[in-house]
Image 1 (cartoon, helix red, strand yellow):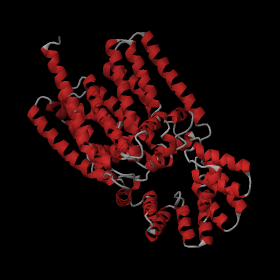
Image 2 (cartoon, helix red, strand yellow; image 1 turned 60 degrees about the vertical axis):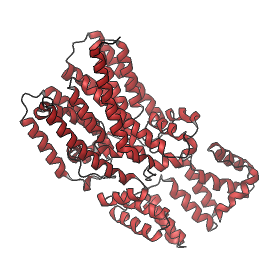
Image 3 (cartoon, helix red, strand yellow; image 1 turned 60 degrees about the horizontal axis):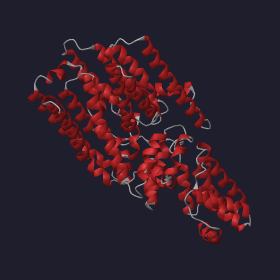
Length: 549
């Protein structure tokens, strides 16, 4: 039988977890009914539905690049989408998973803060603030936003296990720590900083004296785990474009100023955007937020500077990788860095003193939670459908060529060609090298019968975006309709070289092979279609000829 004392502790802890769970689900419940916004989510859920619906394909995620970008190795992230796909052609499972991951992180943060010896009331307060914080709306309401929230599950679990290992000196906890570390690496590359933060915590936070044997075991385990992951990743991505060190450094230097507005969105989440770009981010909120935190420290008596240093390292180490090869400043990338800021705030005197004044603390907490929850509840509506999303993107990031381009694409899909052309031209004016813009203009010209303009637009796209499979396919269609069959076939074959999953190219090549009596190629293309879940037989291949009309 548990003593009354332990029953009370477990009851209070369980109630805390239940509170986080209920607050998170109630706040984000309406996102279960949201549609696709056509920013990567359509690629995962529509374009590759045929692949994701077959669980037997899960092993392929470990041996092939990602499905949105060929530069990333994220098999566990893809498997999470695959599991959602098993529910059928519906979107709510994806959103339900996103909500579940987020509330789980709120609970894990509560557990972590307690492990770091913060008062239970403060730990719960900041876990609730984390759960309702507006800056994480994108991580929950936008399906691909789970990249960083899923990473956080493994990072927090790994770190909690590491702290348990330090406290209890049982290697089973260290093995669990390594297991979660591996899962984090297989979710997003940023996880590579986990050993660094663990080592820093050993030095700055716990200051635990461990044996030299344990030190060597930890060091060798981290090196071996990271090395094996790097070898596997390099082998899988060997055909991808390499990122040179010089390019990475230049990108980091160019994006480094984003740290200021990023910090501002944590303390004062006012300048939120579904598609933030640096030129449209407001630095004022960032500077004001920095000043506010400095003032908090000014009124702090003997803050634990080693904790502050560790919190600052957590913030920077998880944020800096997001500034490499990045032109978008997605808000979900603050998911893990914010925990470092929470550590900083917990070390300020005014925040610590709230633990000694429960009524005052409750009042402050209720005000913050109410304001943040209202902002989050309203802001999440920007992710409810594609038109709302891209109109919001253009409004909050007017200098983003991507925002204008994709708003044009939404008009295009909706048959509003004139509006689409206007948005494409705005995008082109902002950046003549913006991918897909000239291709999309080519589609409009072709539809209007302006074949020479369409050809020029397609060729212009190929000049700036030669690896874009769609433009090769579309130029092939243009040539085919003009009787230039050989050129069309070459372009469709090039399409498949660039994207072996391009189903429409297989269809057209199957029709052409059938029409020219090439039974061997016909069989090959039909088999490729069947492999990708498109049931086609030689007897009905003629039906595909409608594609040429």
